[in-house]
Length: 208
Image 1 (tube, one colour):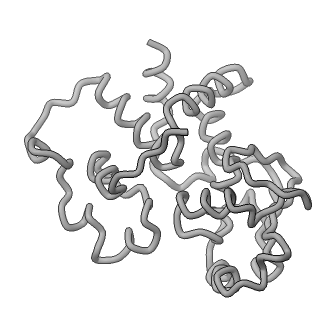
Image 2 (tube, helix red, strand yellow):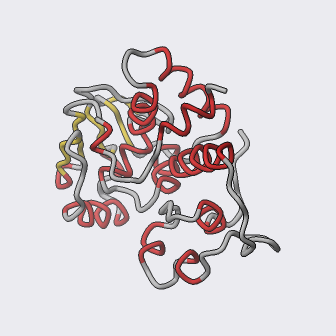
């Protein structure tokens, strides 16, 4: 499947906000957005008038890139969110939050969504005791996500578990870093997501 392989710091600069695609580097002095806040490219520093469609497009791209989702996948999530009861935008964010790679990231066992995706693909996690190596797997309330037994003895996961001890997980996850597990106690609500999304702009974009 196609996947963006270019420098991810360009994506943060293009969206004008930190997407935390490089883990700890994003909070350090090496962050490309802190050093050069203009959009990439020859005309990145030019003042451009942003129209309504441009604002909607940028919000969609920012959300898609934050979660590491491809265009077709994102549209599928939107269509599923639109079929559900309630606010479409909130349903969309809830679906994206429930992706397995995002759950691993929220647990504190990965520094970025990209690292979480890689760890899941390599088969280091289980859901309800069964091997799960699909990053797009949608978890449900009551599911238990855990590091595979054979992976827990590796130095990497021991270090990740120590780091996760001080990580602040969202309230819809009950994380026990010492046990390498997290339980989905409830479905994530919109207010549980601390990243600055304006999901209504995405709904307006797809409703044209």
